Amino acid sequence: MSLHNSEQITTGAKGKGFLKTLIETNVTRKLIPKGMSWFGCMGGLSLLAFLIQLTTGTFLLFYFSPSTKESAISSIQRVIHTVPYGWLVLRLHAAGSHIMICMVFSHMLRIFFKEIYRHPRELHWVSGSCLLILTLLMCYTGSMLSVQNIYSNSVARLLPVYLLHIAATPLAMSLFMGMHFFMVKKTGIHEPL
Ligand code: HEM
Image 1 (cartoon, rainbow, N blue to C red):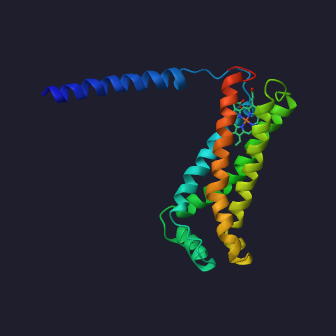
Image 2 (spheres, rainbow, N blue to C red):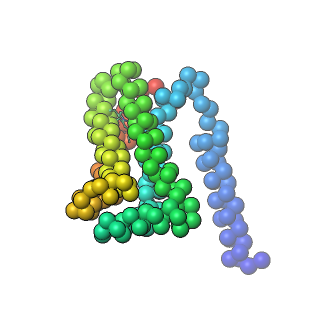
Image 3 (cartoon, protein in one colour):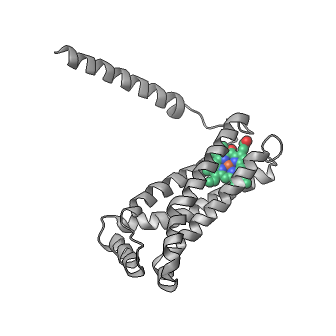
């Protein structure tokens, strides 16, 4: 066996051991706290929903063509009827936006009723409120890009709404999420796991 090959095997085995330890310490050997409720998971689930929206949205970005009403509608038809699993990704993206709103609202309600918004977490609440508004804006601009709404709206609105949906709002969300997580890390969570 060449030196090069044996080095590769050693680093491969080391990498596997490192990954195994990382997964065991952070996932498989972590116990779920006894009092943990579904409401307590809604912050994390909101983040998961955002990442799913980002992934499915990026897939749709490759096919959607908003230059004219006709090309926008035919590109959606192509995703539904021709692109493999395109219909599924589109459905996941559309339903996911409503599921995400429910999760963000549940997260906010828990914070409100448990009064976790009080000092030192005022800024978590403010950045969170901006995230809620941006989530609603994402859902609204997304629904404006559905076939029915493209038919009934003027073509002049199509491009600005599209840019708001794929660039400005997700960028603002990423910034506010960065702020939100930075502050959660700084104060720690209210009920440590
Ligand atoms: C896209 C939207 C949002 C995401 C992805 C998100 C995510 C998270 C995550 C992962 C945590 C830490 C774990 C937890 O306590 O659940 C957290 C904490 C927190 N979030 Fe959000 N959040 C969002 C929206 C909101 C909203 C709408 C509010 C309120 C207006 C809010 C207020 C807070 C507060 C006060 C904490 C600290 C909780 C504690 O210390 O236990 N968040 N958020």
